[in-house]
Length: 143
Image (cartoon, rainbow, N blue to C red; front, side, top):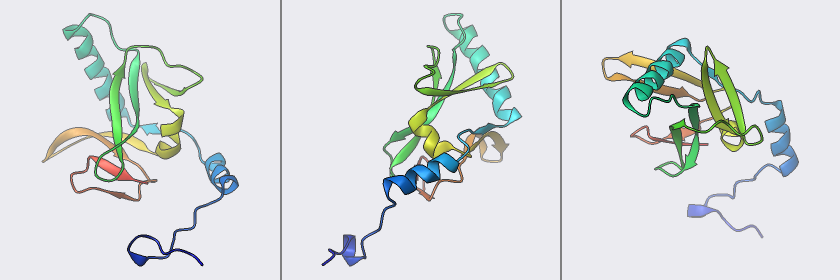
């Protein structure tokens, strides 16, 4: 006899390990970074070099971290060390390097990183087709 799920709902059937691996192997494990995002990353790196130690960062690290209202929050931070080829995907875009750890890439595959400006301000925006939901504040996502 099956036990009911939370709130008496039917339990959710999860894919087998083979089914999960097949889904991952058919994904194109890369992201797109728009020209406006590349230009803004370059400007911020130059600003960081001018204000700090005089050394530009090795690249920008993006990824996911557990936490937030819906389970995952995006990571967006400077990397001062070169990427580890065993651990990271490296994108080189017009002299800008973007590092993505392999685990995060499974969730970010197919994402577009854009820099947008509008009436409400400006900033980087992740357009991720893998997201199933997000919280009201927009700071965390669910897969």
